[in-house]
Image (cartoon, rainbow, N blue to C red):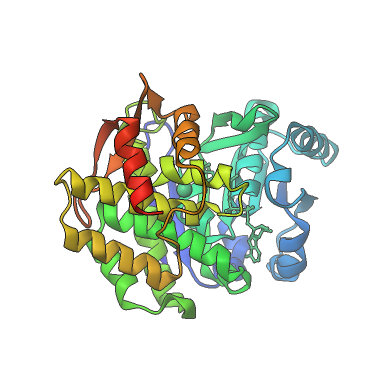
Length: 351
Ligand SMILES: NC(=O)c1ccc[n+]([C@@H]2O[C@H](COP(=O)([O-])OP(=O)(O)OC[C@H]3O[C@@H](n4cnc5c(N)ncnc54)[C@H](O)[C@@H]3O)[C@@H](O)[C@H]2O)c1
Ligand SMILES: [Zn+2]
C-alpha cells in the first residue's frame, strides 16, 4: 500500500493506493459520526456486499449513472436524504464511483451544513488519477458542463485497484490517456513503465505503481495552485483543449481519454514544428498511445469547427488559443498562445 500526502495551508490529507484496501474500509473511515455512501446502481450491484462486509454502518444514497448524476435536481435529492438520515456537521459523505459521483458528492458535501467531510473512493481509472484529487467539485447547468461548483478538498482519498477489474476496457484505456499525460509532463519513469508493461493485464502491483505516481504528480500541482488561479495547474491540461473540442463535436462518440490522446498528438506535432520537441519523442508518445489502443488521428470533423469550439473553451484568450506544448518526456511543458492557422494546419496534417 502506498500513501501520498497532499499538503495544503488549511488541511492536508492522505491519498492511499493499494489493492484490497476497501475490504477493511472500516479502518479507514472515521470511527464516530454518521456515514452516507453516495453511489450508483451499477456500482452498488457490483460492490455492495463487499462494502457491507467491512462492518461499518452507513446510509446508502443512489444517484443516476454518468453525467445524469451531476444535476441540480440530484443535489436537492441527495441533500434531502442527508437531512432525512440525520447527518450532522460531524458526519462524513463517501463518494463511491467514477468522476461523476465524485464531483456530485464533493459538491453536496461542500454545501451541506456549510460543509462536511467527504472521503473519495474512485472506481474509474480517470477518477483515481485525476478527479478524486484536488478538491474541484461541480454539477452541470443547461448552459454547460461543470458551471456550478466549489472547491472542497476531500479528507481522504482511498484508491483501490480492485475496482478496475469490473471497469470496461474502453474506460480503462480512457484513464490511461491521463497517465500518459502525466508521464509526458512530469515523470519519465512513469512513461517508461507504461511503455514496458502490457497494461491489459491490469496487474495489481503495476497498477498501484502507475496510479501512485500519477496521484503524486496531481498532488504536487494541487499543492502549488490549490485554487487553480496561478496558472500552474495549466500543464495538467496537456491535450485537453483539442480533446474537449473533439469530444463535444463528436457528441461524445470520442470519449474523454480518446480526445486527450488525439489532443496530445496534435500538441506534440505543433511542438515539433516549433522545435520545442524532437521527432523521436513525438514518435515515442504516438507509439505508446497506439499500444494502449488510443487514437492519434483527428476524426472526420470539420477542422474549422474544431478550432471554433476551442475558442469557446475557457482557455481561449484574445482570439488566440492557449496550448500546453510538450518539451520532452517527463519535462515541464510550456504554455503558448497559438493562432488559429497554426492549430488548423496541425489538425489537418493529422486527419
Ligand atoms: N473534479 C475534477 O477535478 C475532475 C477532473 C476530471 C474529470 N472530472 C469529471 O469526471 C467525470 C468523468 O468521470 P469518469 O470518467 O469516471 O466517468 P463516470 O463517473 O461517468 O464513469 C464512467 C462509467 O463507468 C462506470 N463505472 C465506474 N466505475 C466502475 C467499475 N469499477 N466497474 C464497472 N463500471 C464502472 C460508471 O457506471 C459509468 O458508466 C466528468 O463529469 C468530468 O467533468 C472532474
Ligand atoms: Zn482529463
